[in-house]
Length: 168
Image (tube, rainbow, N blue to C red; front, side, top):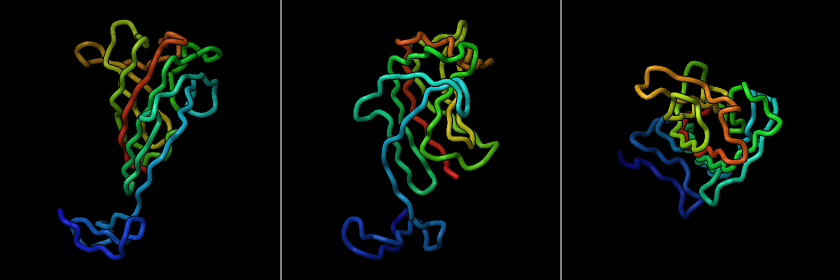
Protein backbone atom coordinates (compact mmCIF):
# COMPACT_ATOMS: atom_id res chain seq x y z
CA UNK A 1 0.00 0.00 0.00
CA UNK A 2 1.15 3.50 -0.69
CA UNK A 3 0.21 6.89 0.67
CA UNK A 4 -2.05 8.36 -1.97
CA UNK A 5 -2.63 11.84 -0.63
CA UNK A 6 -1.01 14.01 2.03
CA UNK A 7 -2.04 17.60 2.67
CA UNK A 8 -0.07 19.81 5.09
CA UNK A 9 3.52 19.94 6.27
CA UNK A 10 5.47 19.33 9.43
CA UNK A 11 4.77 16.89 12.21
CA UNK A 12 1.39 17.54 13.80
CA UNK A 13 0.14 19.41 10.74
CA UNK A 14 -0.34 16.53 8.29
CA UNK A 15 -4.01 15.95 7.59
CA UNK A 16 -6.10 13.82 5.27
CA UNK A 17 -3.67 10.88 4.98
CA UNK A 18 -5.11 8.24 2.65
CA UNK A 19 -3.61 4.74 2.60
CA UNK A 20 -4.43 2.34 -0.24
CA UNK A 21 -7.06 4.54 -1.88
CA UNK A 22 -8.71 7.94 -1.84
CA UNK A 23 -12.04 7.11 -0.12
CA UNK A 24 -12.97 8.01 3.44
CA UNK A 25 -12.46 4.37 4.51
CA UNK A 26 -8.78 4.77 3.61
CA UNK A 27 -8.33 7.89 5.74
CA UNK A 28 -6.01 7.75 8.75
CA UNK A 29 -7.96 10.22 10.87
CA UNK A 30 -7.23 9.14 14.45
CA UNK A 31 -4.00 8.36 16.29
CA UNK A 32 -3.66 8.42 20.05
CA UNK A 33 -1.40 6.92 22.68
CA UNK A 34 -1.36 7.12 26.44
CA UNK A 35 -1.66 5.29 29.71
CA UNK A 36 -4.65 3.61 31.33
CA UNK A 37 -5.43 2.54 34.87
CA UNK A 38 -6.44 -1.11 35.25
CA UNK A 39 -8.87 -1.87 38.10
CA UNK A 40 -8.59 -5.43 39.48
CA UNK A 41 -12.05 -6.48 40.61
CA UNK A 42 -14.41 -9.37 41.32
CA UNK A 43 -17.23 -8.05 39.09
CA UNK A 44 -17.65 -6.65 35.58
CA UNK A 45 -18.75 -3.30 37.00
CA UNK A 46 -18.41 -2.01 40.52
CA UNK A 47 -17.60 -4.89 42.85
CA UNK A 48 -14.73 -5.24 45.28
CA UNK A 49 -11.33 -4.14 44.06
CA UNK A 50 -7.78 -5.25 44.72
CA UNK A 51 -4.46 -3.49 44.50
CA UNK A 52 -1.21 -4.15 42.65
CA UNK A 53 2.21 -2.77 41.85
CA UNK A 54 2.34 -1.38 38.34
CA UNK A 55 4.93 -2.13 35.69
CA UNK A 56 7.66 0.17 34.49
CA UNK A 57 7.61 2.45 31.47
CA UNK A 58 6.10 -0.29 29.27
CA UNK A 59 3.38 -0.91 31.90
CA UNK A 60 -0.24 0.02 31.32
CA UNK A 61 -0.22 1.78 27.98
CA UNK A 62 -2.31 1.94 24.83
CA UNK A 63 -2.00 2.98 21.20
CA UNK A 64 -5.11 3.68 19.12
CA UNK A 65 -4.91 3.98 15.33
CA UNK A 66 -8.33 4.57 13.84
CA UNK A 67 -10.53 2.05 15.65
CA UNK A 68 -7.72 -0.45 16.32
CA UNK A 69 -6.57 -0.39 19.96
CA UNK A 70 -3.44 -2.11 21.30
CA UNK A 71 -3.03 -2.25 25.10
CA UNK A 72 -0.33 -3.54 27.41
CA UNK A 73 -0.91 -4.37 31.06
CA UNK A 74 1.58 -5.19 33.81
CA UNK A 75 0.10 -5.92 37.25
CA UNK A 76 2.51 -7.27 39.85
CA UNK A 77 1.88 -8.62 43.36
CA UNK A 78 -1.91 -8.48 43.03
CA UNK A 79 -3.52 -8.17 46.47
CA UNK A 80 -7.01 -9.68 46.52
CA UNK A 81 -7.78 -8.90 50.16
CA UNK A 82 -11.47 -7.93 50.48
CA UNK A 83 -12.43 -9.45 47.13
CA UNK A 84 -14.87 -12.39 46.83
CA UNK A 85 -12.80 -15.56 46.34
CA UNK A 86 -15.32 -17.46 44.16
CA UNK A 87 -15.98 -14.60 41.74
CA UNK A 88 -14.37 -14.34 38.30
CA UNK A 89 -11.22 -12.21 38.20
CA UNK A 90 -11.88 -9.11 36.08
CA UNK A 91 -9.76 -6.13 35.04
CA UNK A 92 -11.89 -3.06 34.38
CA UNK A 93 -10.88 0.29 32.95
CA UNK A 94 -9.77 -0.47 29.39
CA UNK A 95 -9.36 2.86 27.59
CA UNK A 96 -12.13 2.19 25.01
CA UNK A 97 -15.17 -0.04 24.74
CA UNK A 98 -15.17 -2.78 22.12
CA UNK A 99 -17.18 -2.26 18.94
CA UNK A 100 -20.04 -4.77 19.22
CA UNK A 101 -21.55 -7.66 21.10
CA UNK A 102 -20.60 -11.06 19.77
CA UNK A 103 -17.15 -9.91 18.66
CA UNK A 104 -14.40 -11.15 20.95
CA UNK A 105 -10.73 -10.38 21.37
CA UNK A 106 -8.25 -12.68 23.06
CA UNK A 107 -5.08 -11.27 24.64
CA UNK A 108 -1.76 -12.99 25.21
CA UNK A 109 -1.42 -13.38 28.98
CA UNK A 110 1.31 -14.42 31.40
CA UNK A 111 -0.06 -15.24 34.87
CA UNK A 112 2.55 -16.56 37.32
CA UNK A 113 1.25 -17.61 40.77
CA UNK A 114 -2.30 -17.68 39.45
CA UNK A 115 -3.27 -21.34 39.30
CA UNK A 116 -6.32 -23.40 38.43
CA UNK A 117 -5.69 -27.10 39.08
CA UNK A 118 -5.36 -29.08 35.84
CA UNK A 119 -5.29 -25.99 33.64
CA UNK A 120 -2.66 -23.77 32.09
CA UNK A 121 -2.30 -21.25 29.25
CA UNK A 122 -4.15 -18.22 30.63
CA UNK A 123 -5.76 -15.81 28.17
CA UNK A 124 -7.52 -12.47 28.54
CA UNK A 125 -10.95 -12.26 26.93
CA UNK A 126 -12.79 -9.07 25.96
CA UNK A 127 -16.09 -8.40 24.19
CA UNK A 128 -17.72 -4.99 23.67
CA UNK A 129 -17.37 -3.96 27.32
CA UNK A 130 -14.31 -2.10 28.66
CA UNK A 131 -13.12 -4.97 30.87
CA UNK A 132 -11.19 -8.22 30.53
CA UNK A 133 -12.05 -11.61 32.04
CA UNK A 134 -9.41 -14.33 32.28
CA UNK A 135 -9.62 -18.00 31.35
CA UNK A 136 -7.22 -20.89 31.32
CA UNK A 137 -7.28 -24.04 29.22
CA UNK A 138 -6.47 -27.65 30.07
CA UNK A 139 -3.38 -29.28 28.59
CA UNK A 140 -5.04 -30.40 25.35
CA UNK A 141 -7.07 -27.19 24.92
CA UNK A 142 -10.43 -28.96 25.04
CA UNK A 143 -11.82 -27.27 28.16
CA UNK A 144 -11.69 -23.79 29.64
CA UNK A 145 -12.22 -22.46 33.15
CA UNK A 146 -12.63 -18.92 34.45
CA UNK A 147 -9.82 -17.67 36.60
CA UNK A 148 -11.38 -16.75 39.94
CA UNK A 149 -10.13 -14.34 42.56
CA UNK A 150 -9.26 -17.31 44.80
CA UNK A 151 -6.85 -18.66 42.13
CA UNK A 152 -4.55 -15.67 42.70
CA UNK A 153 -1.82 -16.10 45.30
CA UNK A 154 -2.67 -12.80 47.00
CA UNK A 155 0.23 -10.37 47.22
CA UNK A 156 2.31 -12.50 44.81
CA UNK A 157 0.28 -13.24 41.65
CA UNK A 158 1.04 -11.24 38.52
CA UNK A 159 -0.91 -10.56 35.32
CA UNK A 160 0.86 -9.38 32.19
CA UNK A 161 -1.14 -9.03 29.00
CA UNK A 162 -1.18 -7.59 25.51
CA UNK A 163 -4.53 -7.18 23.80
CA UNK A 164 -5.60 -5.81 20.43
CA UNK A 165 -9.23 -4.97 19.70
CA UNK A 166 -11.52 -2.74 17.66
CA UNK A 167 -13.18 0.14 19.51
CA UNK A 168 -16.78 1.27 19.12
